[in-house]
Image 1: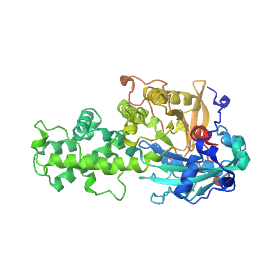
Image 2: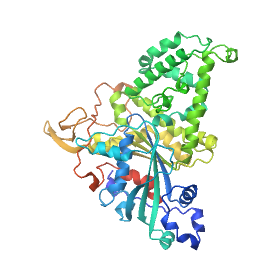
Image 3: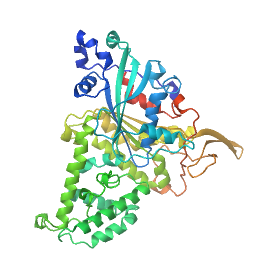
Image 4: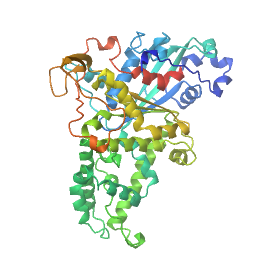
Length: 498
């Protein structure tokens, strides 16, 4: 497919409150204050002049790099119509500039863009350190409106974009809200019957098998069981597995690191005797109590305080790492992403509808990152493979009224297309500096299958996609960072707001 021939339509969205603007409102409408007040927030959102963009990612998906590049493109990449050709507000010349503003939520830590861009564009450049909790940054985008109604009020309009960063592990906790402790334990126990979890969980399982669930709960025992289970989750993460629950065990945040709320674990065997015969101080009862407390005070609280206000959601995944790590890792990633999509169903039986009622996320972008780690001719295959991974859940989400998109992109392009001769034939390659080297190399990383290979076809060594260092950039503030398809992501997420 020749993506240069694609066109995007800009849909002007006039909400009902915007039609009720009086003449007295005209004098202040074009000059919305950057000071965050409930009135300003309500006015901006009712006039479709504010959007909350939530960004999360599965393990090692490059979430911090993505947000840093997205912010940088908007701040510095709008002076040329060629850098973001598919972001129509930029390519049409209607952009008048972007500025970082004070964030509206003072209780949320700030996303440290300045620190991240300094690492990314240093000498030598390094990938920014990943974030481990929720953070936020606000941008104000000034543009020339082509809507007759707003042009009559003022030729210049402003869109406020709040980018909220949170760990993907927290998103994977959402299904726990519909699971009792016993149900969740059964799911984890079944997963640990299959490799690689079977081997990785050995020490934790041995410890659990020596416990008597009817014994009185002992804090030392509870803590040791939880620590062994947490170590098991960290090992799963190192092996490229994505479906890690509870998510806060691997990404607790400094305020929860040693909290009793995180000192529980699932059980391998559900008690066969009636549960009401267990003393309320028993090990089983205390495990269940802490699981329910975790759901109420961490999972549900996060979605009530933050998630219910999101307008649009980005979920990142590193599909290439699944190729490298084998079929089990791929299945785990596929199940994790589809679990997320299933949670977003908006029907009357959907979980969000039950919990929050008015949740209004209307667009979701699923992106597989590091598209620059494959040769250009393999990029369509990578995108097709990713689409096939999500086909069933993607169709269900569309049926429920959520507009979705899947993309293969590189937030920061760190390789260049190259060619080499092999047995008299011209072979497409990529050239870059591997993460564990200081010298550039040209290599053919391998082909990406458009369809999922059979389990027996995931032979060791078939896939070997190399990680690369970020590129050295001479004038980082003179334009946007090199990327692949980030402009398409921006158009999908924000294009209808201008």
